Amino acid sequence: MLKNLLVHVPSERLIRPVVDAATSLAVSCAAHLDAVSIGYETTNIGLAVEGGAAVAAVFEIEQERALARANAALAVFETEARNAGITYKLQALTSAPVEAAASVSASARLHDLTVVLQPEPERDTFDNTIPQEILFQSGGPVLFIPYTHKGPFVSKCIGIAWDGNRLAARALRDAAPFLTRAQAITIISINEAEVPPEASATAVSAHLARHGLTARIERMSANRADIQPAILSIAADNGLDLIVMGGYGHLRLQERILGGVTRGMLQSMTVPTLMSHDSRTLGESGGWKSNLLAPLLCAGLRGRASSCRSVASAARAIATGASAFTTLRPSGHLITNAWTIGQFGIATISIADGPPCRMRIEPRSWR
View 1 (cartoon, rainbow, N blue to C red):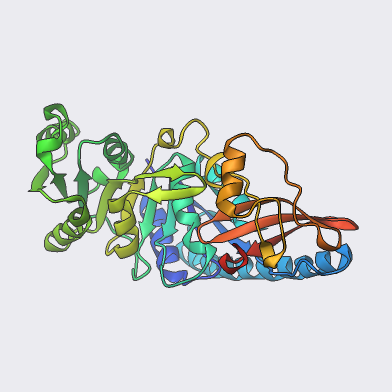
View 2: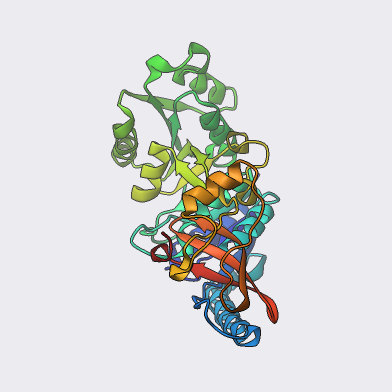
C-alpha cells in the first residue's frame, strides 16, 4: 500500500508536471505527501577575495536567495495540496547539491515511493541530477514524471519491462500497489532467449496470476541500443500509462555511469516510469561521499597552481590512499576538499579569518 509519499519539487525548473502527478496520486491512494524543495547554494567567487567576512557575506546573500527559490516552489505545491484535500508537510532545504541529495535520499528511505521530475538535458541545473541520485541512494522505488506531462497521474495500463534481471524483479515487486489496481498489464519481454526459463515472461505471468492479475506478453528482440526505443514504441502502441523497469547504473571513479536503457529512458521519457535500483550494485555504502563524490583536489582552480596537475591525477592519488588536502593558498584561502557532481564541482574553502564557505567550480576552471 502507498500511504506515505515524497515528492521532490524543483526550485529551478517547471514544477507543474510533478506537482499535479504527485498530488493526484496521493488523492487516489489516500496517502500523506511530503514535499521537499532545494535551493542550491552555487555562488561563484574568485579566490583572491581578501577577508573572510566579505566572502561569508556573499554566501549569506546566496543562502537567502536559495531559500526564497525553494519556498516559492513549495508555495505552488501547497496551493494544490490544499485544494486536493490531502495531508502534507513542507521542507525547504538550502545547501550544496552534495548535502541536499544525501538528505533527501535519506528521507526517501522512509517513504513508500518518491515522485520526481524527469531530467531535462537542455537545462543546466542541479535539479536534473537530484532525481537520479534519489534513485541510486534511497533504496526505494522512484516514479519519474516526464517534464512534458500534463494533468493527473493515472496508471490504468501498465507495461513491465522484463529481462529477467534482479533489478527488473525489484521493480516488479515495488510496482505491486499499481499492478493490483491496473485495468491492463503488458509484460514487455526483452531478448527472452537470454533469460533463464525460471524467470521467463511466462513465469512472470504465472506469478501475477497467483495474485489475481491477468497480463499479456509482448516479446521483442533488440540490440542494446534499440531496447529503449522499442519499449517506448510498445508503450505507444498499447496506450500504456506507466512503465515499470529496473534502474541500472554503476560508478567509475567519481562519475556515475547510467546503463544505456536507463539513460535513454531518462532522456526520452514519454510516459511516467517507475524505476527501482538495488544499492548493492554500488558496493556497501552506495553513497555520494564514499563513491560518486569522492574528494578531489580541484587542480588549477582559477588558473592557480596546486599540488596535482589535474582532477584525474588527484582522483588517482586519493584512490591510492592520499589524504592531504593542502592546496591553493592564495591570500590565506585553503581548499580543504572538493567534490564533483555531473559537469560541476563543489569546493569547501577554509579562510584564515572566516568560517568555511562553499563555492561552485565550473569546468572551465579545471585543467
